[in-house]
Length: 308
Image (cartoon, rainbow, N blue to C red; front, side):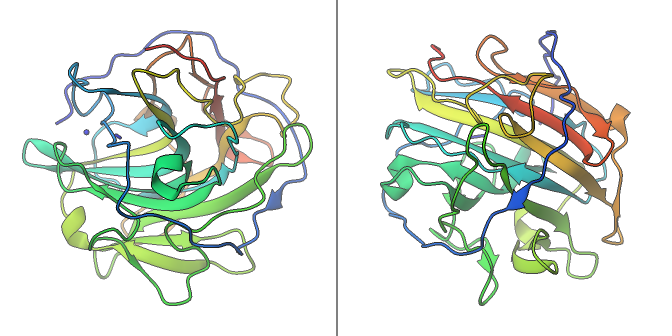
């Protein structure tokens, strides 16, 4: 879906950093792997800061993200809220992810980990944990374990394609998983951990060969993809960021941390971060700001029905 860096077009619009406190419950690790590795209807275009969208493509892709400028960065950690989309159709995909774009000559490789709803890939409308990578900005890339790339650890608490249930319930219950994707200081591989259970759990890794060089761009991204022949699906909870949010209505990334070269976390440096929203009339993102008990966070999302 989603790759050299030329410049960033920023749409100026007014959004709110929501202020809320809530008791949040983590997703249970249980689930079933349900996927059809031979049927992937949507080939994911890339975001604007990597290339101009191909006008000849039959797929529309929109983002609500915060990302870094190109630099020497080593990874991200964040709590990602889990939202379902029970009415999504086969020609639509939606989700949220941590993304690393690695410059390789004049192109960008990309590795990604997160949660999405993709009926064309799994033949259901459940929320799935997923991984994705592309070796350059022009290849179709690879989901989950369809081809050699991401390497899951034995007995991982989340494996690519696994159903994550239950999702958040609007106004009732907030569900999240805390993930990290960072460069291992010893091997150079990009390792994936889950952090919201009793202890951090190693899930797997992307080999160094998929993302070997600096500079990189790091991104925390809400996304939708859909065919031009259909309207867009909801992003996140299906609602815009709102200052009155109780914490159980709007999709978010929170407790956002970055990694240094030694594999240790530190707080964001705000001037390194920029926001990107492809269609602010359809989908929005709030300001990135520190919360009293929630660390650095932002909200994002929007309803279904976007045209073009």
